[in-house]
Image (spheres, rainbow, N blue to C red):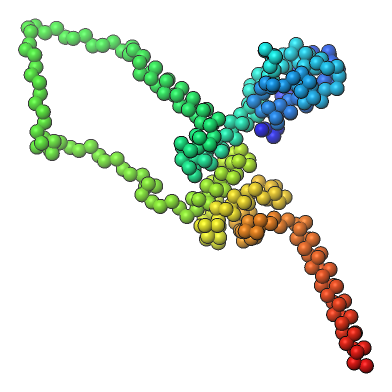
Length: 320
C-alpha cells in the first residue's frame, strides 16, 4: 500500500482532464483526484480487477448518474477496460512509486526472513517476492546464454601455406611429477576477513532494528560510523540478549517525538533504559500518561495529608 500518489502539475490542463470536466462538470476533476488517491492506497499496482462500475465510482466519491463517471473515464482514456475488468491507464508510468509499493514491501519482508532463516525459507515465507527474484535471475541467465551463443564477428586467421607436407605432430608427453612440483603454483585465493571473524556484538541488534524499520518505512535505515557507535553503546547498556528486542519494540513505538524523528538510532540510545522497561512490561509511557500519573500522585499526596491531619485531631480529642 502506498501512502501518497503523484499528481502532475499539468493534470488540470491535460486534454483528457479538460474533456472529463467539459462532459461532467468541474466536480469531476475532484472525483478523478479522489480515485487516483484511492487507487494508490488500496490498489497500488493500478489493477482494479474484480471491481464493478459502482465500486469505482464509490472510490471516486462520484454522486452523479450511475455508470456515467466510469464510462467517461474510459472514453477519455483515464481508465482501460477489457473483458469486464478495469485498470488505470499507464498507472506504472505516471505513478511508478505507488506501483512499486507492494514489491518494496515484499522485498523488505523477504530480506528480513533471509537474515534470520536463509534464502530458501525466505522464498517460502514471501513467495511473491521470490517469484520476482527468480524471474529476474532467469532473465539474466538467459541473456548470458544468448550472448555466449552469438557467433564471433572476428575473421578467423587463414592458415599459412606450407611448401611441403609436414608430419603430424606427436602427442606431447604428460607432465612428470617433477615438472608439476617445479611449475609455479597459482596464487591461493585470499579468504575474506569477515568469514574468519565472529559476528559483531551489534549484528543481531542492527538486523532487528533494520528489519522493523524497513517494514515500517519501506526503506533501509541509514548506517554509518556514528550509527555503528550508537549501536555499540546500546548493546553495552542493555546487553546483547535484550538489545535486539528493545530495538524492534522502539521502531513500533507510537510516541509523537519518536515518530517525528522517524525512529532514529539516537533517540533509541538516549531512552534505552526507559524503552527496555516499557518492552519488559509491555507498557508505553507517553507524555499524557506521565502527566496523568503525576496528577494522581499529587492528589494522593494531598489526600494523605488531610487524612493524617484528621487522625492527629482525633487523637488530640481522645486525650482530653
